[in-house]
Length: 341
Ligand code: DAH
Image (cartoon, rainbow, N blue to C red; front, side):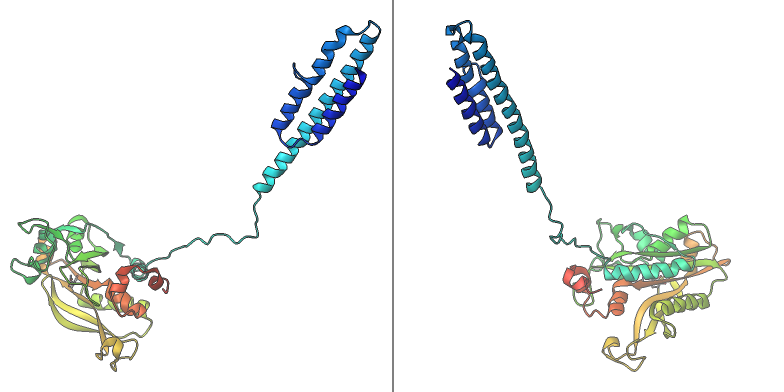
């Protein structure tokens, strides 16, 4: 019996040394110490021993059990450590591997120009107004002195929502003048940028949707000199000191007198080159003194107050600013193109 016990001890030690998983460990515990295990089987035979032998063998069996239990415990701890190490190794991070590059976008070139213009006007005390693109014909046309029968009111020029031509996608930012006059306290100084819509086919210089920037100032004693002074200051800040402007007479229904402003070509200084199409000048905006009829229509006494207004195309300005030749590039949102600015 002693030899049997010794064999169990040796077998158990050897088997436990080779254990690789906790399942194997549990199987060995059952095999040696379980109710139907090898050690229990030996103990069951104790009854056949003499009274003198019994306590000696009992002691020996207890020793074997204790040795196996201790070894089981040690193996369990070692297994746990090994598993933790393996887990840590599998989850380790190689900090030397280059990270995934995050693509960070930036502002669209056209909005970069708009931001610059907004900053200049804010610096001069103007308020930025942004508002609806769906407009009443009354505000887009009638209140701006654009009467029934004016070509701009044609179905072929304007996107209408209703059969009676009363609601439309605004064709210009000028209705913002009316909204400002109707809702704001005098004096008023506003800059209103936004989208406008006309039934144009897309080509290098046309799009059915484009952006305008409307500017307006109303106060006592405002004259054409204020308009020219303000716009000249803007142009100096935008294109640099010494940029030359020129004002040509023009006609707009909602201003009187009306004009268009050109800036001298920054490339050829007026001599004529491809940038200015040989003209020497680049047209940038329409402007004028607000028509008394428009002021009165909004309840402003035109004998006390006067004002100027202008409207310019933002795309056109951005094209010139970044020397882009085709309007479509502004809207296509090809990152390879936009990244350059
Ligand atoms: N709204 C005009 C257009 O789309 C541009 C314009 C001209 C705006 C003269 C004005 C202005 O405020 O005074 O062609």
